[in-house]
Amino acid sequence: GAGVSQSPRYKVAKRGQDVALRCDPISGHVSLFWYQQALGQGPEFLTYFQNEAQLDKSGLPSDRFFAERPEGSVSTLKIQRTQQEDSAVYLCASSLGAGTTLNEQFFGPGTRLTVL
Amino acid sequence: AQSVAQPEDQVNVAEGNPLTVKCTYSVSGNPYLFWYVQYPNRGLQFLLKYITGDNLVKGSYGFEAEFNKSQTSFHLKKPSALVSDSALYFCAVRAGTGANNLFFGTGTRLTVIP
Image (cartoon, rainbow over all chains, first blue to last red; front, side, top):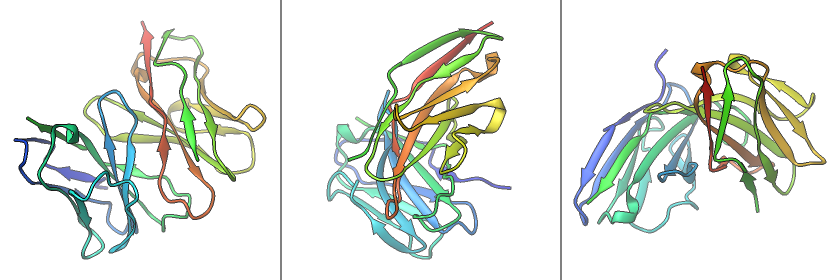
C-alpha cells in the first residue's frame, strides 16, 4: 500500500519568500506529525494533529510557521518570510491511532528546503 | 524533561560480526523507546519499540534491542552485520501518557565493511 508522501521533495526559496510543504499521510491514519531535521541532527518535533485538530504546536519555532489539516487527511506546513536558518529537511509522519497510543509513526521521505 | 543520547556518531563493523549501536535516555515517567533507520533520500523506517514486558525486543531485519532500566539504556544489536545495514540509526523516546511526539537522538552512522 501507499506510504506517506510529501511534495515537493526539494524546494529552493529566496530569503523572505513564503513556502508551502504538503504531506499525504497513510489513508485512515488519525495522527499526523511534522518534524524538522537539520543537517547532522535528529528530527525535532514541530506540531501534531489528531484528525483535523491541531493538538500540539509547541515545537513550532516562530509565528512564521503555520500548519493545517483542514479535512483530517492532507496537511500543509507553511513557512512565511523564510530565513536561512529555516533550511532543513521537513519530515511528515502519520500513525494509526490517536497520539497517546503507542503505534509506530510512519515517515515520509521529507522535503529538503534550502533558503538562499 | 526528556532526552536521548547516542554517544557514538559513527560505528564501523566488519560484515558478519555482531553490531551494537548505543542509546541512553532520560525521561520522567515510563519510557517508551523506539529505533528508526534512515537510508539516503528515504524517510525514517521503524525497526522496533519497547513499551512494556520482555526487556529483549525483536524487530525488523534481524535487529533486536535490550531495555535496561537500571542503566537507562536501549542498545540496538544484531548478531551478524550485513553491508546493507549501513545507514543512519536513530533512537527515540516518548514520555508517558499525554505525550504525542517522539524525541530523537542525534543519530549514529553505521558502516559495515565488506
